[in-house]
Image (tube, rainbow, N blue to C red; front, top):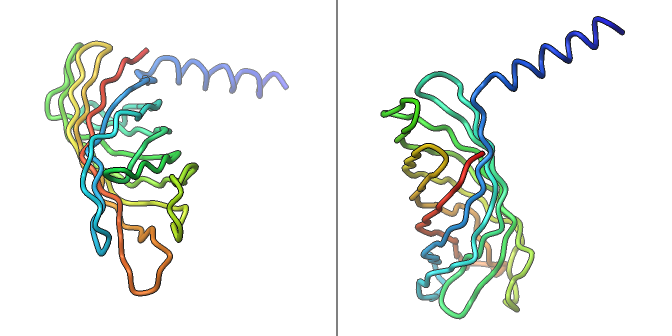
Length: 171
C-alpha cells in the first residue's frame, strides 16, 4: 500500500511539474456547407469550449478539447458537441510567447438540428490552423474540413466546413 501511495504521489508531482494548461475559449466561425446542398455561408457567434494542452517537447504540444459549436449556414444553425485532438508545432517558443501551426481530427454530435429533416447526427473531419499565445491569452485561427456526409438522402452529399476564430484564456 505504501508503494502504491508513493507511486501516486510521484505521478502527481510529475504532472504538476510540467507546463500543462487548461484554456477556456470563445469564438466564432464562418460556417459553410459544401456539396449538393445550396446553403449560403454565415458567421456563427455561439462557439465556446475548453482545451487541455500538454507539451511533448520544447516545440511540440498536443491538445484535446471539448466544445459547443454552431455550424450550418444562412438560416440553418445546427448545434454540436465537438471533441478535437491537435498536434502543435511551435516555430516560436519562449517563456511568454508561442506561435505555431496545428492539425488534427475532430468529431461532433448534433444536439440541435434546427428542424432539418434527413440529417445525420455525426460530423467528423480534419482541422488545421495557426495559434499564437502571449502569457495566458491565445488566438487561434483555423479551418475545419468536414469529411462526413450529414444528409441522409441517397445520391446527395453535403459536408460542413468552416473558418474559425477563437480567443482563449489559460490557467
